[in-house]
Amino acid sequence: MQDSDINQEGSAPADLARSNEERYFITALARGLEVLACFRAADKSLSNQQIAERCGLPKSTVTRFTYTLTRLGYLLQVEAGGKFTLGTATLALGSSMLARLDIRQMARPMMQELADFSGTTVSIAVRDRLSMIYVEVCRSTAALSLSLQVGSRMPLAASAIGRAYLVKAGEQERKEILSRSQELDELAYTAMRDALAKGLKDYEQFGCATSFGEWQKDVNGIAVGFYPIGGSQLMSINCGGPASSVSQQFLLDEARPRLLEIAKRLES
Image (tube, rainbow, N blue to C red):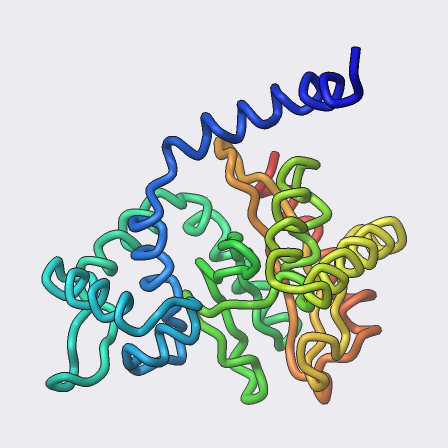
């Protein structure tokens, strides 16, 4: 048997599986969803050029997508021939998703209690590609608590809430996340790989993930990943605040036991 035959035999099942999967992938739909996903909580509106730059698509292609999405109510044109913002149709989708997350109602009193005790912001987030999106946020009344809200995004690699997710995720999901990172560039892949290693080390030492001045130099945070009662979607819960009022030692000594207890109660 020739080497070429051996290689062909060895690679055929994997190639066939990828081929079968790709048959069901609709590129136009994927790009349309990428257009919607490129909007961030801080964005008041985006132009076709800005969307094109974020999605890595030609402006002419984006123009057709934004026209279609506007007609369907997923985008709203706020200036004639100008910029776009998310429309009410996306609100309906988001509301339906949040309504299914019953865990938020169960978690909110415990989160608020921890926020008030520690003078921090306590949040729950789920993963969206290489980001974490907040689905519930409780703040203390402290003037220096973080001004994050439902819908805010956090980087998966640099944040405690993202690292906690990486640690708790299954092997297949980790591979998919690392693969997505590598598609961006080598720096993103290295950062994600290092974030996983840091998270695993933190979990071994503290039972949680940490980020002390790594997401933002003046912000400290800790987080735990958990699978909510009756649910299969992995989530993370964090506790953090400005480094000037929430020290690393306070989070580890005082807030960490309470955060771990909340995650345990939400999971069991």
